[in-house]
Amino acid sequence: MRIGHRIKLTLILGFGLHFCDYRKSRGSVALAIFVGAFFFLIQFPVLARPNILFILVDDLAWTDLGSYGHPWHHSPHIDRLATEGMRFTQAYSPAPICSSARASILTGKTPARLGLEFVVKAEPGEQIIEPPQILKTPPFTVALELREETIAETLQQANYQTAYFGKWHLNPHYQGRYLGWSPSHGPQRQGFAIAEEDFGSHPYSKTRLSVLSEEGQYHRDGLTERAIRFLEESRDEPFFLIVSHFFVHTPVQSPYAWLKDKYENKIPKDAPNRALRIEYAAFVETLDHHVGQLLKGLDERGYRESTLVVFLSDNGGHPEYASHAPLRGSKWNLYEGGIRVPLLVRWPNHIARGAVSDTPVVGYDLFSTFRELVGAPEGSLEKSRDGLSLTPLFEDPGQDFDRALYWHFPYYHPEGAKFGNATLNIGVDDFSVSQTRPHSAIRKGNYKLLYFQEQGDSELYELNEDPSELSNLSHLLPAKTTELRNELQSYLTQVNARQARLP
Image (cartoon, rainbow, N blue to C red; front, side, top):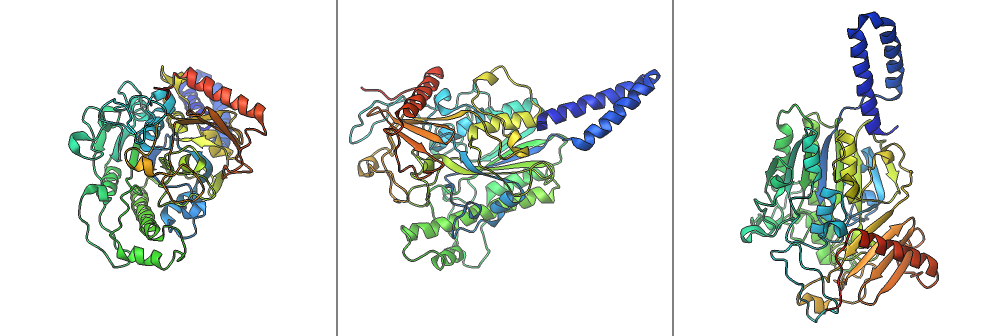
């Protein structure tokens, strides 16, 4: 029985017991209901609505954590979520870039449906690339539109206390502050009653941090401290808290000499981009430290058992810092390295410890998941959402979802002078910035198709046998290629997706 249904049935039985107690002349009926309810509740225990702590991190690759097999990154606090909860091996970001991924996660809609497929810009102008691009890309999207209902607004209506700390990036940089929140389109206009802007100890803060050499010594992180203070507040209602880290986004500059010394001795001498990856490993462990502080704050306030913790990266890792092997590609493209991300979920007594799910899931599933868990009614726009609730996987991690996943990226990246220097080839662990060009993708079952707008050609991969996406099967399996290409185009047409076109 689904978790949300168990909550509702328990409430109905409780009402029946109180009703029959009131009608004393129906005592035998009350006894029968009591006995039935007793055995029902033995099998299906009462589930209170959980608190939800959603930890969203920036640019963390699928392979960056110890729990996902990284050979030298040390991430014990985050890995504890995998030990005590569920690890998803085939979880995806909705997009290979931050703004569109974050908008999709908050609304439960694909970037194609939202018309927000790139990073937000100050003006809805055209993308200008040198050397000139072949296709004309859609006008830039300025911000997540206020008419879109976010999961925070839905949970507010269900009497959840909502809070947001950290990276937003769904409005243009406000008043010249990089990633600054806009008062007209910031978190408080999208359903978050409490929202405080803080860059924490990330270099974005522009705070000059002293170099620390003593092992285990870290600078204070204002972002984490604000979130912990929120947990310490007294409240009568459950909470929905998003902690959106700036780690491990560039600039990757660690002030912890002891951490860099640790990885200087740990990373093989012949590792590609070794100097950058030493800094990056220190960044990953710093992120883990701050997540550990947050989880400790949750425990100390007594929220551990009653809180669903979700940990997710917004997209794949940076190509110059993160190793994505065996996956091909990185942030900014729709090969697996750009969109497959770590997803960990912990809810004591409701999700089995050490569970693993290989079912393909995606960030825009979280809207439906949270809505079902809190018992919030479906809104009038629910049919336009693209995700499914993940709650069946909490009880049966091996359950299959018979559906397709969609991605759409009708832009060029990187922009500016760097575009001309980027390589045309996108490989596995080439540690170089590559040219991403307008393309879309669909995954259904183990097959994934990428469609490239410039040439109108497709690539088809069988991910179970070829997770590195190196064996293009489009010519060997023309019927499957045509089937998935048509299904992808049908979806993009259905949602009126914006396309890159000839000038």
